Amino acid sequence: MAKVLVFIDNPGASLKKSSLELLTLARTLGESTVAVNGDVSDAVAATFAEYGVGTVFHPSARDLNDFLVAPKAAYLSAAVESAGAGIVLLDNSPEGKEIAARLGVRLSAGVITDAVAVEADGTAHKSVLAGSYTTACKASTPVSVVTVKANNVVPEAAAAPSSPEAVTIEVPADSTAAAARITAREQKAASGRPDLTDARIVVAGGRGLDGDFGPVEALADVLGAAVGASRAATDAGWISHDAQVGQTGKTVSPQLYISAGISGAIQQKAGMQTAKVIVAINKDSESPVFEIADFGIIGDVFDVLPQATEEIKKRKG
Image (cartoon, rainbow, N blue to C red):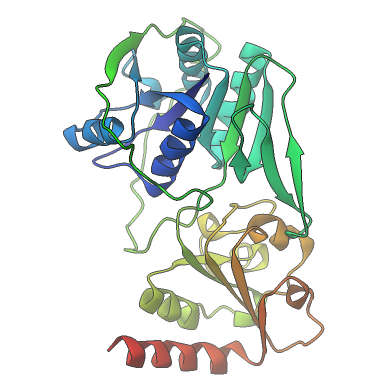
């Protein structure tokens, strides 16, 4: 049976849905262990037991968050060796990908990103070319490091809870890893909406909104959705860059992706092509977005979005 290590960074008061998906996937692949960075609440510890985790690793150093990702990769490398893991699973976030890359260098391991499924032998499946094809790839090294897209696994607790063993891992001393220190942080104001990469529904706007994201945000709020944007919209300063979806932004894989006023260039497709259902709204009938959309609406977003919002309010109310 394969040994699988899941890395969970700063779990907080409760685990994110994407973390629960990784724990579920790990259990289907073999014997699951967790390397956690940050404090573990009683609720999180109970969740580890519910999901059948055998061992929970903690770093000896408590200041990993004071640096960039290199010390986390060093800690994770030591945890992999201690666990004897053959597969390492991480979030498909930008930081998760960077940690995976650094871990691959430390372990001389193959690294696979943007996976939507993983088999017990380490074979990972990726959705490519706007979802037209699914590819299979497998690392030829003893350890395989894989970042997994959210919303591709249904979280499910184990049939019987486990009693995880807590193990402290000595973080290797590495002067270059800690060469840059984070000196200050500024908390981002909470929007009340779900995290973009974890959301089951995403409503995204682009150049066609001409700077007015009000209709997109209104629809997102009635749907309980996250708000995304194209690079053109973020570069124009209409919305913050952390909402950008695409090749140079975040990768999302929601159950429903609503594209409003976005042309659907290949850079945008790269970030949302694995969405289960894509609805495109654009007044240009020749827009490339309609080539990948499951449902297309040719019309002005300022007419379509408010109507959709009001109709949903009526049905919910």
